[in-house]
Amino acid sequence: MPLLSAEHITVQFGGLRALSSVDIRCEPGQVTGLIGPNGAGKTTMFNVITGLQPPTNGEVMFDGADITGKSPYRRARLGIARTFQKLEAFSNLSARDNVRVAAESRKSWDRSKFDAGQVADDMLDRVGIRDVANFMVGTLPTGTARLVELARALATNPRILLLDEPSSGLNEEETEEMAALLRQLVGDGLGVLLVEHDMSFVMSTCHFIHVLDFGQLIATGSPSEVQSNAAVQTAYLGTTKKDET
Image 1 (cartoon, rainbow, N blue to C red):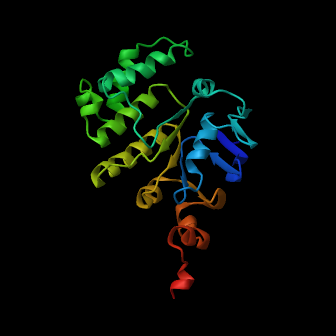
Image 2: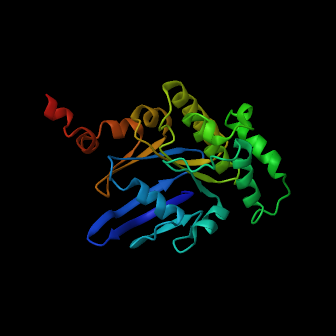
């Protein structure tokens, strides 16, 4: 049984069908990719999984339980965390205080004893940016600010982490460091669902990939299987290898 599954998800906005009976599965200890051209329905699926968008049809299952009707904050308590394509950090707070906010919030449902400040420092260490702990996030480069947002998500002690375009705004070195960090996180047992447009990042990081196009699931499989899929090549390039010969 997967840790997280979205089953037969359909989302209808008036006459627009954003998702059409889509199935997504995520395992612990793996990076699962969710890719597709702009407008394919990736962010809509993220919103369904996190409770920001109710599906027209379908179910979201987490650890064997149906959570389709649960609110976003209840899903967070179960262990679902996310980041956003557009940075959502508090720009007028320090990196440490941004992460500490999440740790303090976790106290409302996690009855284990922990110090929120220590959790903040530990998470900044984990993502490799303890040296900017006292810097206001609004003054930090985009790549560092994304790591602050990631540390904040990790401070909630999630079981699965949804990342929306984590390499956006990063240079090549920062992207490689992000990929290495994700491999380390899943090595510790965390599940990651990744929406990303950088295909080299996806193919080098993901264990399994789902591909959306116009709200429909057109391919699933390993990176090599997805790369060789004719429907995926058409969706991204408008052509297939056969057409090119």
